[in-house]
Length: 251
Image (cartoon, rainbow, N blue to C red):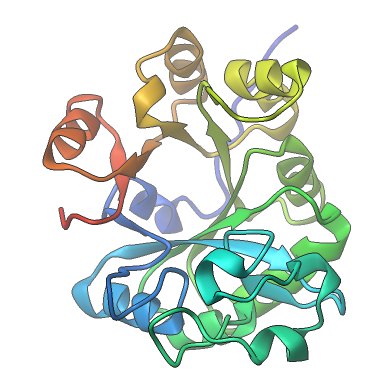
Protein backbone atom coordinates (compact mmCIF):
# COMPACT_ATOMS: atom_id res chain seq x y z
CA UNK A 1 0.00 0.00 0.00
CA UNK A 2 1.50 3.29 -1.06
CA UNK A 3 0.85 6.39 1.05
CA UNK A 4 0.88 9.77 -0.57
CA UNK A 5 0.86 13.06 1.27
CA UNK A 6 -1.39 15.65 -0.35
CA UNK A 7 -0.23 19.23 -0.11
CA UNK A 8 -2.65 21.34 1.95
CA UNK A 9 -4.92 23.68 0.01
CA UNK A 10 -4.35 26.58 2.40
CA UNK A 11 -1.01 25.94 4.09
CA UNK A 12 -0.52 29.64 4.71
CA UNK A 13 -3.43 29.49 7.15
CA UNK A 14 -2.15 26.45 9.03
CA UNK A 15 1.10 27.80 10.38
CA UNK A 16 -0.70 28.88 13.56
CA UNK A 17 -0.97 25.24 14.62
CA UNK A 18 2.69 25.54 15.67
CA UNK A 19 2.41 29.11 17.04
CA UNK A 20 0.87 30.92 18.97
CA UNK A 21 0.05 28.92 22.12
CA UNK A 22 -3.61 27.89 22.37
CA UNK A 23 -5.79 28.92 25.32
CA UNK A 24 -7.73 25.86 26.51
CA UNK A 25 -11.45 26.77 26.58
CA UNK A 26 -10.40 30.39 26.23
CA UNK A 27 -8.31 32.42 28.66
CA UNK A 28 -10.49 31.67 31.66
CA UNK A 29 -10.09 32.54 35.31
CA UNK A 30 -12.21 33.27 38.39
CA UNK A 31 -14.09 36.09 36.65
CA UNK A 32 -14.16 34.62 33.13
CA UNK A 33 -15.67 31.12 32.99
CA UNK A 34 -14.32 28.51 30.62
CA UNK A 35 -15.84 28.49 27.12
CA UNK A 36 -17.39 31.91 27.69
CA UNK A 37 -17.37 34.95 25.43
CA UNK A 38 -15.40 36.78 28.13
CA UNK A 39 -12.69 34.10 28.12
CA UNK A 40 -12.50 34.19 24.33
CA UNK A 41 -12.30 37.98 24.29
CA UNK A 42 -9.39 37.86 26.73
CA UNK A 43 -7.53 35.35 24.57
CA UNK A 44 -8.02 37.56 21.52
CA UNK A 45 -6.82 40.63 23.41
CA UNK A 46 -3.60 38.91 24.50
CA UNK A 47 -2.84 37.26 21.17
CA UNK A 48 -3.49 33.60 21.96
CA UNK A 49 -5.29 31.13 19.73
CA UNK A 50 -8.44 29.56 21.20
CA UNK A 51 -9.49 25.98 21.86
CA UNK A 52 -13.17 25.31 22.49
CA UNK A 53 -15.72 22.49 22.57
CA UNK A 54 -18.93 22.11 20.60
CA UNK A 55 -22.08 20.11 21.33
CA UNK A 56 -25.50 20.16 19.67
CA UNK A 57 -28.76 21.24 21.29
CA UNK A 58 -32.06 19.40 20.90
CA UNK A 59 -33.07 21.93 18.24
CA UNK A 60 -29.87 21.43 16.27
CA UNK A 61 -27.84 24.51 17.30
CA UNK A 62 -24.08 24.13 17.87
CA UNK A 63 -23.22 25.52 21.32
CA UNK A 64 -19.85 25.95 22.99
CA UNK A 65 -19.63 23.82 26.13
CA UNK A 66 -17.41 20.94 27.21
CA UNK A 67 -19.69 18.88 29.46
CA UNK A 68 -22.71 16.99 28.18
CA UNK A 69 -24.47 18.10 31.39
CA UNK A 70 -24.56 21.73 32.51
CA UNK A 71 -24.40 21.10 36.27
CA UNK A 72 -20.68 21.74 36.81
CA UNK A 73 -20.66 25.03 34.95
CA UNK A 74 -24.04 26.45 35.88
CA UNK A 75 -25.22 24.71 39.05
CA UNK A 76 -28.31 23.52 37.17
CA UNK A 77 -28.29 20.06 35.64
CA UNK A 78 -29.55 19.97 32.06
CA UNK A 79 -28.55 17.51 29.39
CA UNK A 80 -27.30 19.64 26.49
CA UNK A 81 -28.46 17.25 23.76
CA UNK A 82 -31.96 17.08 25.28
CA UNK A 83 -32.33 20.84 25.86
CA UNK A 84 -33.29 23.60 23.47
CA UNK A 85 -31.14 26.66 22.90
CA UNK A 86 -33.74 28.78 24.72
CA UNK A 87 -33.53 26.54 27.79
CA UNK A 88 -29.74 26.66 27.86
CA UNK A 89 -29.67 30.43 27.38
CA UNK A 90 -31.63 30.85 30.61
CA UNK A 91 -28.65 29.49 32.55
CA UNK A 92 -25.66 31.52 33.71
CA UNK A 93 -22.11 30.25 33.90
CA UNK A 94 -21.09 30.10 37.56
CA UNK A 95 -19.78 33.35 39.01
CA UNK A 96 -20.72 35.50 36.03
CA UNK A 97 -23.51 36.93 33.89
CA UNK A 98 -22.25 34.90 30.94
CA UNK A 99 -24.51 32.44 29.15
CA UNK A 100 -23.57 29.34 27.15
CA UNK A 101 -22.58 30.78 23.77
CA UNK A 102 -23.60 29.56 20.36
CA UNK A 103 -20.81 28.73 17.94
CA UNK A 104 -22.13 31.56 15.78
CA UNK A 105 -21.70 34.07 18.63
CA UNK A 106 -18.10 32.99 19.19
CA UNK A 107 -17.27 33.17 15.47
CA UNK A 108 -18.74 36.67 15.30
CA UNK A 109 -16.72 37.80 18.33
CA UNK A 110 -13.43 36.33 17.14
CA UNK A 111 -13.62 36.88 13.37
CA UNK A 112 -10.13 37.34 11.94
CA UNK A 113 -8.55 38.27 15.27
CA UNK A 114 -7.15 34.87 16.23
CA UNK A 115 -7.48 31.21 15.15
CA UNK A 116 -9.93 28.79 16.75
CA UNK A 117 -9.33 25.10 17.39
CA UNK A 118 -12.79 23.53 17.54
CA UNK A 119 -13.18 20.20 19.31
CA UNK A 120 -16.13 18.29 17.92
CA UNK A 121 -17.33 16.20 20.85
CA UNK A 122 -18.49 12.63 20.29
CA UNK A 123 -22.23 12.17 20.47
CA UNK A 124 -23.86 14.17 17.68
CA UNK A 125 -23.75 12.67 14.20
CA UNK A 126 -21.13 14.41 12.06
CA UNK A 127 -23.71 15.38 9.44
CA UNK A 128 -25.79 17.05 12.17
CA UNK A 129 -23.11 19.16 13.85
CA UNK A 130 -20.38 19.84 11.27
CA UNK A 131 -22.33 21.89 8.69
CA UNK A 132 -23.53 24.42 11.27
CA UNK A 133 -20.09 24.80 12.77
CA UNK A 134 -18.49 25.29 9.36
CA UNK A 135 -21.14 27.80 8.31
CA UNK A 136 -20.51 30.00 11.35
CA UNK A 137 -16.73 29.90 10.99
CA UNK A 138 -16.83 30.71 7.29
CA UNK A 139 -19.40 33.46 7.66
CA UNK A 140 -17.00 35.43 9.87
CA UNK A 141 -13.83 34.41 8.00
CA UNK A 142 -12.32 32.69 11.03
CA UNK A 143 -9.03 30.84 10.69
CA UNK A 144 -9.84 27.47 12.21
CA UNK A 145 -9.16 23.77 12.58
CA UNK A 146 -11.63 21.02 13.43
CA UNK A 147 -10.42 18.53 16.02
CA UNK A 148 -11.86 15.33 17.48
CA UNK A 149 -11.08 12.03 19.19
CA UNK A 150 -13.78 10.58 16.96
CA UNK A 151 -12.35 9.75 13.52
CA UNK A 152 -15.88 9.72 12.08
CA UNK A 153 -15.98 13.48 12.57
CA UNK A 154 -12.71 14.02 10.72
CA UNK A 155 -13.70 11.56 8.01
CA UNK A 156 -16.87 13.57 7.37
CA UNK A 157 -14.87 16.79 7.21
CA UNK A 158 -12.37 15.28 4.80
CA UNK A 159 -15.16 14.14 2.46
CA UNK A 160 -17.39 17.21 2.61
CA UNK A 161 -14.95 20.05 3.36
CA UNK A 162 -11.52 18.81 2.25
CA UNK A 163 -9.85 22.22 2.50
CA UNK A 164 -10.74 22.49 6.19
CA UNK A 165 -7.90 21.78 8.60
CA UNK A 166 -8.27 18.51 10.53
CA UNK A 167 -6.62 17.65 13.85
CA UNK A 168 -6.68 14.18 15.42
CA UNK A 169 -6.89 14.06 19.21
CA UNK A 170 -5.04 11.20 20.87
CA UNK A 171 -3.35 9.93 24.01
CA UNK A 172 -3.27 6.91 26.28
CA UNK A 173 -6.77 7.68 27.65
CA UNK A 174 -5.92 6.12 31.01
CA UNK A 175 -8.95 5.89 33.25
CA UNK A 176 -11.39 6.89 30.52
CA UNK A 177 -14.62 4.80 30.49
CA UNK A 178 -14.32 3.70 26.87
CA UNK A 179 -14.54 0.28 25.21
CA UNK A 180 -11.14 -1.32 24.66
CA UNK A 181 -11.45 -1.17 20.87
CA UNK A 182 -12.11 2.58 21.04
CA UNK A 183 -9.01 3.09 23.17
CA UNK A 184 -6.90 1.03 20.80
CA UNK A 185 -8.06 3.03 17.79
CA UNK A 186 -7.45 6.38 19.49
CA UNK A 187 -4.06 5.38 20.89
CA UNK A 188 -2.76 3.86 17.66
CA UNK A 189 -4.30 6.53 15.42
CA UNK A 190 -4.58 3.88 12.70
CA UNK A 191 -7.65 5.74 11.42
CA UNK A 192 -5.28 8.48 10.24
CA UNK A 193 -5.04 6.34 7.10
CA UNK A 194 -8.63 7.38 6.37
CA UNK A 195 -8.76 10.89 7.84
CA UNK A 196 -5.19 12.03 6.98
CA UNK A 197 -5.12 14.88 9.53
CA UNK A 198 -3.04 18.03 9.17
CA UNK A 199 -1.96 17.95 12.83
CA UNK A 200 -2.13 15.84 15.98
CA UNK A 201 -3.22 17.03 19.43
CA UNK A 202 -1.71 14.68 22.00
CA UNK A 203 -2.03 14.23 25.77
CA UNK A 204 1.23 15.56 27.17
CA UNK A 205 1.04 13.03 29.98
CA UNK A 206 1.17 10.23 27.40
CA UNK A 207 4.15 11.58 25.44
CA UNK A 208 6.46 10.47 24.05
CA UNK A 209 4.94 7.41 22.42
CA UNK A 210 5.72 5.17 19.48
CA UNK A 211 2.44 5.97 17.73
CA UNK A 212 2.97 9.72 18.06
CA UNK A 213 6.51 9.45 16.69
CA UNK A 214 5.37 7.29 13.77
CA UNK A 215 2.49 9.51 12.69
CA UNK A 216 4.37 12.73 13.24
CA UNK A 217 7.06 11.54 10.85
CA UNK A 218 4.70 10.05 8.29
CA UNK A 219 2.33 13.01 8.16
CA UNK A 220 5.12 15.57 8.62
CA UNK A 221 2.69 17.53 10.72
CA UNK A 222 2.75 19.82 13.75
CA UNK A 223 1.84 18.47 17.18
CA UNK A 224 -0.09 20.27 19.90
CA UNK A 225 0.08 19.06 23.50
CA UNK A 226 -2.88 19.14 25.89
CA UNK A 227 -3.44 20.22 28.56
CA UNK A 228 -0.39 22.14 29.76
CA UNK A 229 -1.06 23.64 33.20
CA UNK A 230 2.35 24.21 34.78
CA UNK A 231 5.73 25.76 33.91
CA UNK A 232 7.21 22.25 33.89
CA UNK A 233 4.54 21.14 31.43
CA UNK A 234 5.27 24.14 29.25
CA UNK A 235 8.97 23.28 29.20
CA UNK A 236 8.12 19.68 28.37
CA UNK A 237 5.89 20.70 25.44
CA UNK A 238 8.67 22.85 24.05
CA UNK A 239 11.25 20.07 24.58
CA UNK A 240 8.98 17.75 22.58
CA UNK A 241 8.70 20.39 19.84
CA UNK A 242 4.99 20.91 20.30
CA UNK A 243 2.64 23.85 20.68
CA UNK A 244 0.96 23.95 24.11
CA UNK A 245 -2.78 23.98 24.63
CA UNK A 246 -2.63 25.61 28.03
CA UNK A 247 -4.66 26.72 31.03
CA UNK A 248 -3.98 28.28 34.48
CA UNK A 249 -0.61 29.55 33.23
CA UNK A 250 0.42 32.02 30.54
CA UNK A 251 3.20 31.02 28.13
